[in-house]
Length: 114
Image 1 (cartoon, rainbow, N blue to C red):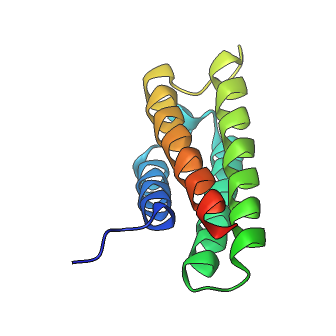
Image 2 (tube, helix red, strand yellow):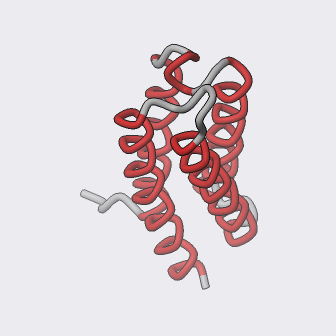
């Protein structure tokens, strides 16, 4: 039985993140615009991870996925701290945990791809 790679683990976490975003109402995510922006970050990260898993330009796609995850993390942190239309703290902390784990997995994948 093959061990799942770090990229597979990151893709799984990003999938869980996408599912969490999809099932959360927009008002818990800071409104429609913020929810759309967060979904865009996760969608792009998911696409780049999928390309890397298929072997297409692995290093650049992992770098791009990591950049999108970092941008997502920054958006969630600022959304939690926002006064008007904040992201629900409990939901935000869950998403930050998944994002941090996915980013770490992408970094392990980047180190293996070198």
